[in-house]
Amino acid sequence: MVDYILLVLAANFIADLFFIPLVNTGRHGQLIGFAVCVAYFGILNSAIRGGQTIGKKLMRIKVVDLNGALIRLDVSMLRYTVFALPLVLFDPPLAGGIADTATILAVSIIQIFLLGGMCYLVLFNTPSRRSIHDIVCGTCVIVASNGHVPQNHQLRQSHIIVMGVLLMFAVLSPWQTGPDSQIQNALSLAEVLIEKQTVADAPRLAFQIKSKTEGKSNITVQCTVQVFDPKHNNKALAVAIAQIIDHTLVTTEKTADYTVHIRYGYDIGIAHRWHTIDYTVNRDMFGIPNTGGTVTAFP
Image (cartoon, rainbow, N blue to C red):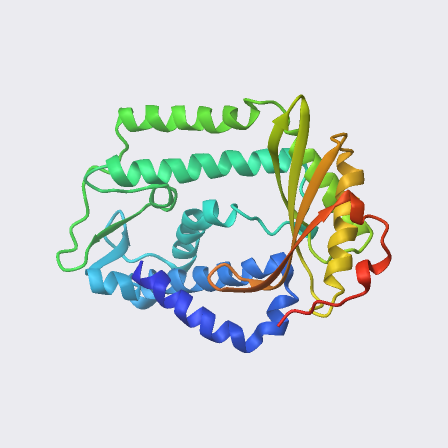
């Protein structure tokens, strides 16, 4: 925790000095933060820096292999990569922001298994507390002063059974409701928006049935998009996006409200800064040229 606090503080200070270049990285900016973390934890947890990050020094612990020796740089970097993978996959920087349904399901399976497995092993795999990233890399965390490495490195059968059940759950969970039509709608919309160059980044959609009365639905759709130009005619852009959403999703409800969150900024994982303008659009606003022609610029 100490290490992440230090990284976040440093990253937020430095990142603001490179605001425009980071804005232009779009979704791929998260790879910058990931690379910084891999370098920090990889170098400091390796033999280069005695197997201790700043936080581990304060806690008087260090990372070693199962023989008690400090680990190589490549092993240390792999260890952190496995550890951080579930967090990176919460919003993977896919090419163009678009993935097919199979990729989304695969990411979901990896997330559920790794995140659930790591939490379980840290809590119950006593006395070593070795989790998935330690098992993959053949490492463990020990008290730095005595250098004692736990002798029993093997997972107990009960832990293996639990991990097997968790893997089955991870594989079956995304398929419980069958193929997600909302995912397909989101992917179709992302392709349309990027093809029309309406926005520079793929949208993130949240579908919600707000209310139902007398068999008629009032559907509310929220869409978040990132723009690279802070001087967009944002209101006109919001209406254009809402109209594309309406046509792409082919909603048949008599009432439909769209909330479009247009944002300008960056997110590199360990630091982010956003300026956001929200617009509520309904079908009555479709077809109005420039929606007044006003330009709402970001600060």
